[in-house]
Image (cartoon, protein in one colour):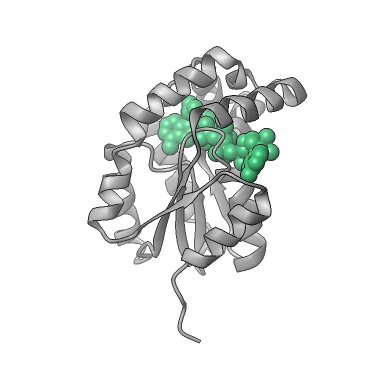
Length: 190
Ligand code: AP5
């Protein structure tokens, strides 16, 4: 199955995609994780990306697309994938559509996780205290929420037009949210 997860920062995309990966046995591809790996490796691309990520803005479409193209060319995605954090704007929606058409891997569903700002601020504050992720600083979390509203929220309409959108309430414990996600997955013929 080929799934896109999107939603505001801290809405639980990574947490739920990890659970779904075990359930469906398909790889979890997070553009945030790909970028953080490049930052950790200290590559020129990683250094450029870090400067942008630390401000809460989006890394350039070209950089993220080339990383994603490389990842989707790997053999383990032949049976499907869970894409977390891409697309994040309408340019990326078009790029993904083109890429998946070339790979003959049509998307099955785009899952949007809905979580109100107050819960997001609380979650990111907890993670900031535990993990010190630079973009979990409360001021940057607010900036990321603004970027989400301005650039990523319109992605929902794009998937609704394709009749692929499922919106899931992301509030509640992790298992309850996961059960809601399982309930919206399309049935795959046996
Ligand atoms: P990315 O890593 O994608 O971050 P994000 O979308 O901002 O998401 P988060 O990782 O903060 O949250 P999440 O929704 O995955 O939730 P999680 O499960 O971690 O991107 C980081 C940056 O990279 C971007 O700002 C941008 O600069 C760049 N980037 C990435 N993709 C890009 C793209 N396509 N184009 C351009 N730039 C891009 O959970 C969050 C916390 O909440 C955790 O501590 C978790 O334990 C907790 N939690 C999860 N579920 C629950 C629950 N149900 N109840 C309580 N707590 C919960």
